Length: 362
Length: 98
Image (tube, rainbow over the protein chains, first blue to last red):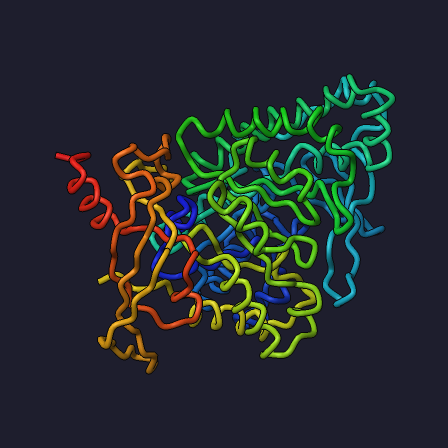
C-alpha cells in the first residue's frame, strides 16, 4: 500500500475496497452480518467490526476502511421509529427500506437545517466524545499489523446537502451563498476534528467520500466547485497532512474536468475511477506520475451480472492499463455493494493476486 | 499512522528489454524470464518532496535486471521504479551519495 501510494512498484498490486455491504460480507464469510449506519449501535460495534474484518481477511485484502459513522458517541442512540425513519448524530433524517437486492439500506429522508434560524441553533457531533471512535479503535487494534487501515469520512458537499436537502443546498449556493458557506465551514471544522480523532485512533491514512460528479460529469460547473469546494478541500488536507499522512479522495462519476483540482487540493490517491467515463489508460498517462489511482473494476454490469471470464478480463485490462511503474491499486468502481455477485468479487481478488505481480528484481 | 518517508527511489521509463536464456519457474508453474531493462531515469518517486533529478542523472539510461512473466512486464515505454538498492548504486556511481 505504501509503495503504491508513493508511486513505486510494490511486489504486487494492492487490494483496496471502499466498503462491503453486509449481504456481501455474509456471503463471503458465511456469518450473519450487519453493519449499516442504522445498525451501528453500541452493543453491535464489535460484532459488526469483526464480521467486516473476517471478510477482509478471508479475501486477503491489503486494506480496510473504517468509517466515522460506524460508532456513535456514548449516550447517542439511533432509534428507528414506526415509520422506519431515524435521525443520525448530525441531525439528518434517514429512512430504512430495501434496495433492489432486498438489502435494508438507509436512504436520505430529510434535512437537519430548514432555515438560517435552524442553523443558529445547530450543534454538530463531537468527534472527541467518548465512544465516538470505538469502531476505529477496535479495528485498528485487531488488524494493525496485518492490514493498512484507512479512516473514512464524508465530505463538505455530501454533508451540506444532507443537512439542507439537495435542492435547498444547491439553491443556497446561488441565492444565499453566505449561508451555504457557513454550513460548509461548520462541517469542515467538524470533519477536520473527525480526521484528527481517526488518526488518534491509529488509522494509517484518511479518505474522504463525496461524489461531486455522476456519469455525465460534475454536478455543478467546475467554477462553482473551485469557488466553494476546492478551497475547503485544501483547508482539510492542509490541516490533516501536518503529520505527512496519506489522503485518498473518493469521487464517483466523470471527474475529468476536476481531476487536476483534487491533485491540487493535496490528495495522494484518487478512487474509484468509474468506467467507462473514466478511461484508466488515459488517466494513468495524464496523472500517473502525480497521484496513485485506485479502482476501475466495474461494479455495474461486470460485478453484478458478469461471468468469471468477464471479471478476469476486466482485472487484466486494468492491470495492463495502470500497473506499470506502481501507483495503482485494484478495487471496484465504487464498493462491494449488495447488488454484486460475491463470487465475482472472489474472482476479482484471485485474478488481481495472480496477474498483478510486478517484475521481480533479484 | 503511516507517514511518508523520504528514502530515495528512482523512477524511469523502460527504453529496451533484452530477454536472456535464464529463467525460473514459480510455484504456480509460471516461467519468469531474466531480462535486462534499459531505463531512462525521469524523477524520484513521490516520497521525495523534491522529485526533480540532479543534472548528473536526469534522463540518464541505466541497466537493471528484472524477471518477467506477464505481457505487461515486457512492454517498452512503460514506467518503472528502481529498488532502493538500485537507487543507491546509481546515486553512488554518479557521486551523488558518499
